[in-house]
Image (tube, rainbow, N blue to C red; front, side):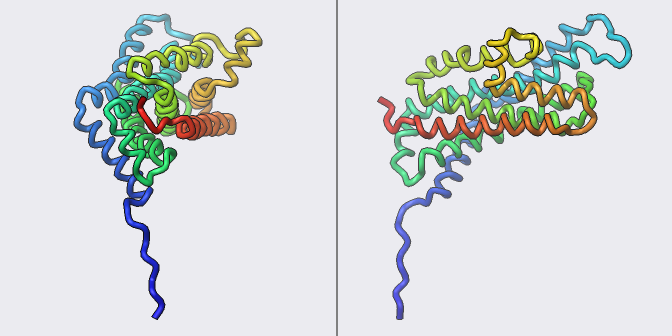
Length: 263
């Protein structure tokens, strides 16, 4: 009889990946303040924005309200900012507590490890974007020519981008405070140049070039496409694909720069 070869002992990478994802989700569920921040902060800020523009002059027929123009862009920007901040801090906390270093001794690769974190926070990002869209469209009467489901899809992908960039930023930070310090460096320029404050075509030439290299610009562009057109457009799908590629590249770069030791 031919002897069968024994499989190597120890946990398999896929099992470690799933275990990492489940562990992070359980930690998030137990941290009620973080869950509240994830789910409620974008919705509350959108509500505040609604009252800011409540007494603004009514536009002529066929022209979107100021809240509609700004609010739909904020449905992509706010989840992106919140997920970046929470992911960067949570990942750095894992590093300083020694959990990350222990996980690096398992057969799990660095990319699979970050994918596990990314998957867990992406689930949270989906819930966050869903609550924000629910509040915006059904409670605040945000209006868009396109489907609410397209807005939700773009908001989720943009929140996942925040997760990926948060994981990348945490790879370069040594403390939670340093992780927070990356926020104005990574998020600030994207917020100013994404087309929310000034249309990208009206920016000075050199700033428009920088804007074209930033992923949040394409997320806002995709949302604006949904606000203007009743159906999905080719430009919207192109912009959404670019945002997804940026998120995947940030995740791979974060894996390449992830240190095996905390010191």
